[in-house]
Length: 442
Ligand SMILES: NC(=O)c1ccc[n+]([C@@H]2O[C@H](COP(=O)([O-])OP(=O)(O)OC[C@H]3O[C@@H](n4cnc5c(N)ncnc54)[C@H](O)[C@@H]3O)[C@@H](O)[C@H]2O)c1
Image (cartoon, rainbow, N blue to C red):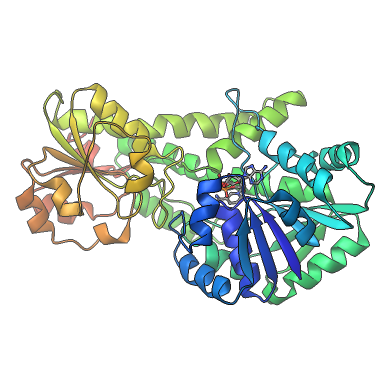
């Protein structure tokens, strides 16, 4: 099939590359000229495992092309995938300006029947608004169908997730759109991993409700972790015990420094804004957001317990990305923690295996180390913010020897408490209740 992808960010680039890899002819459009210029040279603007190989292979075989030419792009595909960003506005509502701009462009340049498949995460009812907008702005009256096709890929495993989805959701009222979308996706359908065809609004809601549930689990466990610290329980043990219950399951039960990224925070706030428009207070999600904001700020008091005055102290931070295997620092807890450290006069040395280029665009006054041990050299404490695998198996004695003071505040619980204490570290994690019992943390 001939496909047009609108927006070549995390979702659009992965979608375009993977569909090309499945044998489709794909033209990706972006308004960011610099991004498109790089992509045309085979340079991938984001870090996503496996993506670079797929992009280069399909560019070589001429199934994957990039353009800024809207007329060419919107004439090209019989299906147009909308993958533009839908960020939060100041008040938490969803900023639909990028999507609306794309739709008015499509109306202007479409040259025949098109299926508009919305992959961006959009408020419920958007597909209906898109229909109206398209009709209003069409230069010539062509038929079209609008489909809600939410994307569930996770950054860091985006290619794997796209190629092996847990489910594919297609929200449509049109028999023709259903037939075409089913035939496009059929190669990705597996036993027990269905293509689910629904009405449009339910499809739109499935995406928001899924992200809301995942964020809720995270904030729930972070609240349990706080109580564990007060009552002397260990949240890792608690999570394991809970996860063995089939009704609960083990995933998304890790306590930490809170969720970040370009999806969970904005989607929770988007849901709250949607509820407000309909007279609902969305109490659960408000609490989820509040707990998360507090959690991002919960590591600093643990550090201050050991080092009450941070002036002139050298603090190492491992991990800038909002999670491992991505270079995405949007709404990353690291940004808040670094700001807090700097406000209290600390000198901050950071290391992240992939996110340094993204961080350089927003962070000021930090020193970038080339590796984890380089970051901790002569530092007064280490804060672990992102659980990159390469932090897990370092030589802990060497780590201790490099530090001026062996203080570790571990926001991801990647080390074993007893082992770290045994090695002589002052070590505090999240929700590891022993520290309370020993009066070692606030
Ligand atoms: N990142 C994720 O993990 C993820 C997962 C599932 C769903 N989503 C949703 O997918 C959407 C895209 O997310 P993303 O992370 O890929 O965003 P992104 O910011 O990485 O990329 C969006 C791209 O769209 C381009 N763009 C904006 N307006 C355009 C227009 N009118 N025409 C052409 N290009 C345009 C931008 O220049 C940018 O390159 C969002 O709605 C997001 O919520 C994201």
